[in-house]
Length: 591
Image 1 (spheres, rainbow, N blue to C red):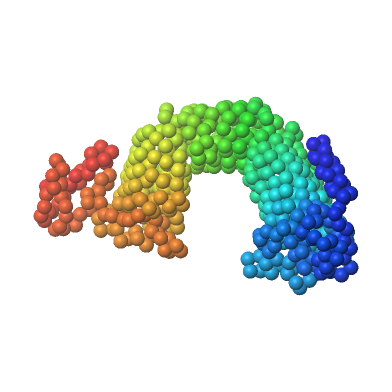
Image 2: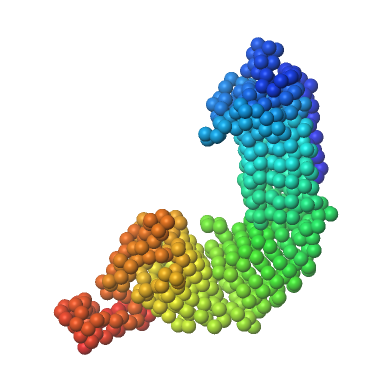
């Protein structure tokens, strides 16, 4: 708090110094006459660098102020040099004359409002003193005022619009008064020198992009009514090292810069720049909230509470220095991405022991964690088991849950019926993956981010496919689908969509003879909304490989191969189908 007060004091001193040496004092008796009053006093309006104004202002006056600040219209530069403007003794009134046109929409002044885009792009401005009776700061009001150094928000202001201060790079400290009850989306984002933000007692909720890209932000102070926020919000500020909430907040508490629920049973947020290497959770903790430790770059070891029951999604995501996490028996749930990593980031976490009590591990819990090769499961766990390669299965080996990113080869047991959500996600060591015929279900994102994958073989048993199973498979060139048919009710609208577009540009879909036309407009392979087929093309396999059985009509003209692989021609009857171990090669044998 001392740093905040010091920053505020320095800014106030600078403001007082500016007040003492205004170039011009202007009193306006009738709204809309500011320009006439200024030009009556000064021969060179564009030469004014500081000004104090008294009286009512409307849209015409606001347009003239923008002109003096060096911008006409939305972004056209003028010769205006105004750096300091004191509007403390002014009040804004309604008018029917616009002060700005925003993408074809005229903006008009409103009583008590510091209007939308009023000072947008006024890059010369360094100091602004706002009207004392101001009620609302509208959207983008100060956006891109890159040289604005101080903003004192009047106590009567009740709302701050979206992007109000976006791009105000030189403001170091900002205090939101207790009267403010609503703050719009991204109101304070991209304020690149902002170090401390204090939210008054009236602020109940904040948007997830409020402080996005504010990498210098170190401290956030939260008031009495604060209770609702998107869990993304705090980890987006990479320099954040302290979260403080007032002691009489009924929802949250803080200790050593860490945010907890008031009962201290949930760890809500561990600031990403908090310089703590070894952390022991308080005994009361039962839940580690979503994103709680996300991007905590100094954290190396964590000793979990013996009462911990749940680690929510993305809880330790992006913790690059994390080497060891001691999970106590009693833990039940591990969420998606809980120990995952962003693309291209290296992890220090090489092994993890899953306690006997864990009953629910969401798909993708370890997504893109290239270092995590040795997942082990307590032998007493009745729900999960890990093999010696670090692959994670359900206890009955019917579902594959996780394959280490660095695995070079995977042979699935014959018991496996499901490739779980994100099971192969992030696979970087396999160019080819073969899913055998006994697998029936492919989960959401099963092969997502498999960066080396060029060829994928899905066996004939596949009958259900989740969403975005090929997402970001940028190297994929061939998908071989041996299933005779996948019912549309078992497909998602975007089952085989790759959001990067690479699959659509380069990957061929290989299907059984006589079925190609079925896929060109089939749900999961094609989007009616975008009128787009998700593959470069579809082609029928000449002699399908990897199929355990194939029905061939009697007396049909087909392509036939003997056991040596030599092609035979002519009418055939009573074909037998034989395969090599693992269904790698299929041959058709004539009786």
